[in-house]
Image (cartoon, rainbow, N blue to C red; front, top):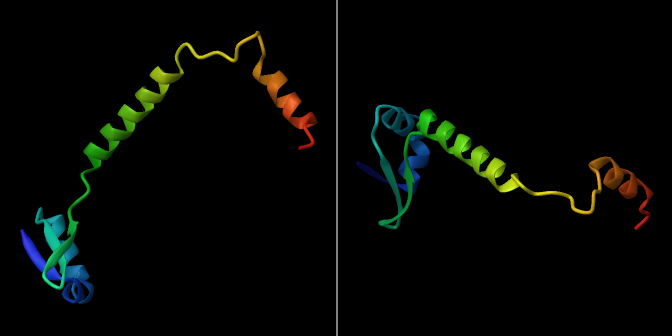
Length: 84
């Protein structure tokens, strides 16, 4: 893992990004204290996370109703009449 100061990270960002693409992790410090880590985004991980979130939303919505036989269309019309 590479460790660089904030000023060096700013001046050598392009080189650091190249290193990250090669699999390196870069820790950025300020006054010798770690404040950030630069790591590659793994597209497969991001897609899996998004799929999991979509499934969670679908599961949460399952079984939810508007109650009282109210339709979405009726709610939309009621919203149009509302003059808050």
